[in-house]
Length: 367
Ligand SMILES: Cc1c2[nH]c(c1CCC(=O)O)Cc1[nH]c(c(CCC(=O)O)c1C)Cc1[nH]c(c(CCC(=O)O)c1C)Cc1[nH]c(c(C)c1CCC(=O)O)C2
Image (tube, rainbow, N blue to C red):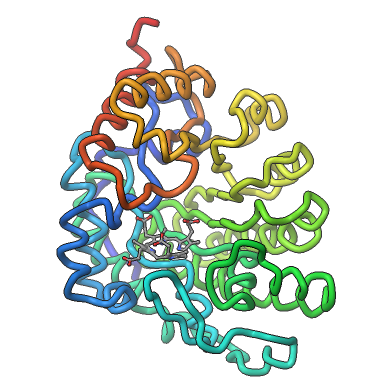
């Protein structure tokens, strides 16, 4: 029997994700549960990062912190976790000190043998499912809950680099030296992502976002060769499994950061995702020209605008609303930053960002 959850009181996000017109744009921000919040830092001071991810009570508490603080202004919660729980589930050790680090990364294709041959997501990632279910109850229907996964290319790159990297030299060496092994490992990661995302829907996620944070590092040709097939496999198989298992038909968002070539956007819009997330390096008008109304869009304020003070935030939100054609009739647009909020932002400046989005994306605002 699927869990019963409290009825949803605010479905702006889900309606916009399906391309519908809304009375104002729904808004949330990537990394909204994080270090810019003193209430997050207070918990983090006493707990390791992955300990929080693995403890549903703590993950739920942190997920709802921004919902509590910005109640009435914020339109979605995103489950507190990390994209790197998938490499962990596949058998790799990942530490967070302070950025991610893998003590034993994949150096050559021979190291693939170190990964688990099959991954039981219920066993390895059941703690994320428990956190989602708990959070759905805790939210009491105030806003929808987003589940997420890393994209296979981005996860592959972390598993080979062993952490952050400026050049992705090691991961790219694999692509060019071992293209077939790379493609097959990327698809193997995609299969785990599918099980993981379906499990999240079962546990209560109401929208799923796939983060391809390192898509910007690939040429349009390599994005098409190495990343797109796995992104398509995820959308196709998640939808098929959701239908077969009679689960809710949740919207899917793809955030392929910096995959801004015309050919990449055209291809991304045809993969089966409902929403494309945009970073700030492309103009929304240009993307609309390419994709028409075939997908909803999410984004795309430069996160550093939040350091510009209130006038700048207001001015740039106005510009963003115009660019997404959100004056008078926002349609198929979810307001967000173009990447995660950074630790130095003043939480009151984020509040002002939310207020400006409410004002300038409202169908009743006179321009
Ligand atoms: C690439 C990536 C990672 N993790 C994630 C991505 C994709 C999004 C993106 O591109 O930013 C996704 C992620 N990570 C986290 C969330 C939680 C939900 C949210 O509020 O958005 C989400 C959705 C928590 C986190 N993940 C991390 C933190 C900070 C760690 C801490 O508390 O010490 C949080 C709140 C750590 C993390 N995790 C990762 C990095 C590179 C780092 C270190 C850099 C940084 O600190 O921003 C990997």
